[in-house]
Amino acid sequence: MSTIKFKNYDEAYSQTEKVYKSIQKDGTDIVLNLKKICDGLKEKWHGEDAPIHINALANIQSNLKKYFTSSVSMIVEVSDRVVAIQKTAEAISNYNNVGANLKDEFDGTDDSEEALSKRSYKLESLKDEYDLLDNTIVDFVKFKNAYAVDFENFFDNWEDDPRKERIEGIFDDFISKLDEYLQTMDSVRQELGKAVVNAEQILE
Image (tube, rainbow, N blue to C red):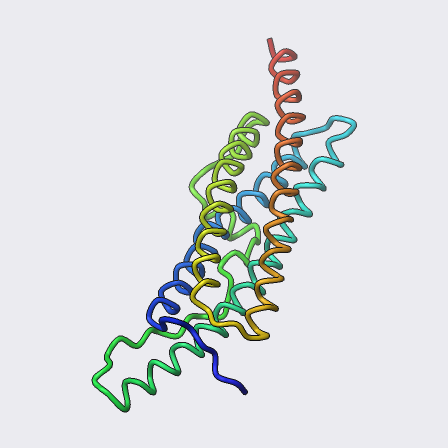
């Protein structure tokens, strides 16, 4: 198996760790928030087109979970190679900056009812789902922009090889899908906003 080559191996480890932590924290929040929103909407949103919109969010949630899970595995694979090289440097020189091996597991995989119940917020009305979706979209945009920058820095540091091309292709495809997901979430938010207004008018 060929050696993976970076311009700076310490930066390579820091870059993989940063992307990894971003997925584990921000990616998990987005995935679990979308799951909680979908679960709540199934109980409260009864409009004619509601199933279509809820299903659209559920598909995004499922696709993100699959991507983040596979992305974590790819990042861990690269990080493990970097750590192995750092350990070799440590054995033959005074190098003492070896990174820790990362866990090959996406924290957002567990989106069970029990896992969701541990989150601090409660969704008691359709407006609560709307507000959480609104906040999730804001977080999604922040994640997307930071994720793109972090990965570009990582690729700039990585010397060309077939593995880089493969992962870069997967990343580019994912970024394009994030734009589609954002458009879909915004569309659902608008329709949900109308439903919230209608529900509030009924209660008046």
